[in-house]
Amino acid sequence: MKNKISLVAALFVGVFLILKILRKGDIDMDVVYATLIIHGKRTFAQVPLCLRERTKKCLEDLGMSELATLENN
Image 1 (cartoon, helix red, strand yellow):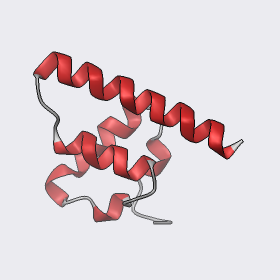
Image 2 (cartoon, helix red, strand yellow):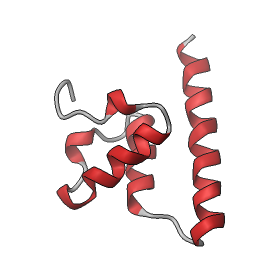
Image 3 (cartoon, one colour):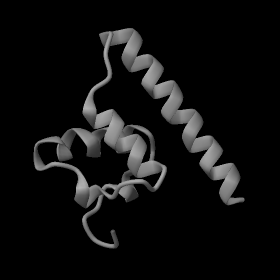
Image 4 (cartoon, one colour):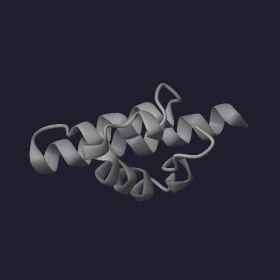
């Protein structure tokens, strides 16, 4: 079950990244951090202060707002 959730999350992140690239032509660091958080490589507490709001917005857009908390990280 966890593998299916990870696969779905990766799919959403991939689509989100593709849409951002097509729209703006580049990748923002907030999207990179959101991807790292989703895959468990970073925590929200490790995101630089200047990027936290934008990273939180990315996670909310992907339906993963529960990962955008400083507690339990």
